[in-house]
Length: 187
Image 1 (cartoon, rainbow, N blue to C red):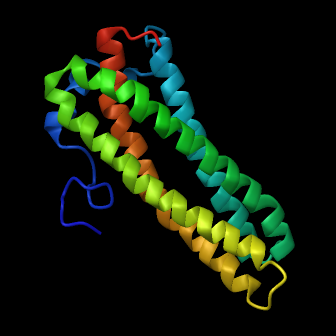
Image 2 (image 1 turned 90 degrees about the vertical axis):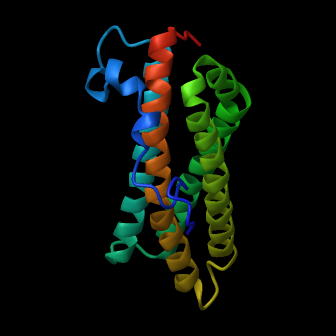
């Protein structure tokens, strides 16, 4: 945890100064037909991450409820974790490398917000590295006497990273979606 109130693991949302685009384009309008295709695409990608996280948690809940064994958990959870890791890492690389530098220049008032989102990626990446290590450990120890402990550690990691990932997705949308809409960014 950080003492910084805007750190991803501490903040409960963006300060109003970074939510300025929501005045002209609030969340309840994001599904309108006039929403830019780029914004709809961005929202779709984020929704995929949310669903994927819920899927991983459901697989874990199924195991914790005794409805599958460690082999079943391994067969369902590890491919889901691998896909989540790959997709989220690639998404963040594209954002940080291509989109955020362009967005930063569009509105000086939001440059700090874009920098904040970019620093969120560092925090999420650390969580992804932990997730990767726990998944590898479970995989390598599937036949070991303490396999259930490795599975529990991986499961705990999946659940622990969820709130920060969701906080980042929500906050990013509140800055990026109105920015895309306002500047009519096509892709």
